[in-house]
Length: 210
Image (cartoon, rainbow, N blue to C red):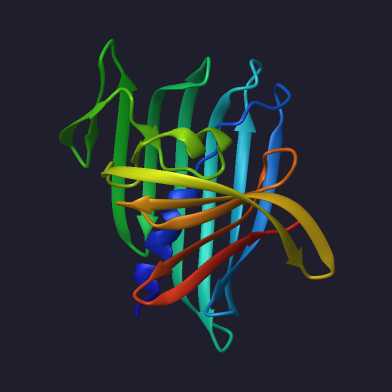
């Protein structure tokens, strides 16, 4: 299993579209676990405009083995949302040296944009594959935020009590299946607290800090 594959899997959580107080910056930190062992950190900086919509999001993640950093991932997204819909997106992803320049704009019936200079079109019913946004739980068609790959999914819901360190958290659990297999847990405020998926037979968990 390569570090590249692990961090590529983390891309799906690298966007937030929730509505918060206007004109503020929010920092979120989390830990990455592989097969139960802590293997890295992830950091999100989300900037909200005066309307409370996302203006910019930056993601940084790193993995280390025996204390030696082995992989870096950085992603910057500039998003415009209106009435719960993504209107346009401009992003740059540095996947350990491999660069992805992406843009997307919503039209009357579809999204149009470009990925590294090549034209891209997506149906307007597609939703960003972002487990930061609670609305993802009832969207059957997702797209990832690096290469705009479309994914058909089904979602099942259950209730579960998570134990994180010494805390117990009453959470909603959502299992995604189909073209994307993952599990996300949201707390009573509908904020993400944990995300899990499997990569090359290994369990990868991203757990958000308080």
